[in-house]
Length: 101
Image 1: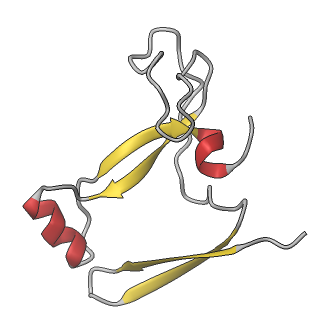
Image 2 (image 1 turned 135 degrees about the vertical axis):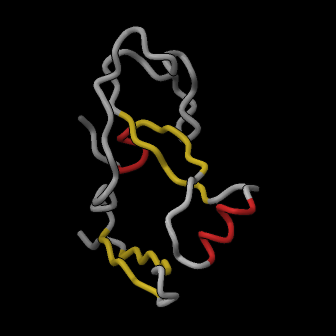
């Protein structure tokens, strides 16, 4: 079975670009995995934006970074490759990585 090659491009603090190569199914490299979700977690019952199924007790999730949003300081830091506070959404681990737990 052939896997699709995925290339991510970013910028370092010095302005130079970096490239990370992944094969389909290996995208979880570097993603934090959270869980299992306890029964009192505040996101229980909220819908995952990727699959529209609610988060349940015992689920594993991760955060998918969307970018700097409308925060001007975060936008400038992003443009220059510096760390910034990002807007992110919580999704099921399987939705982000294709892996089941």
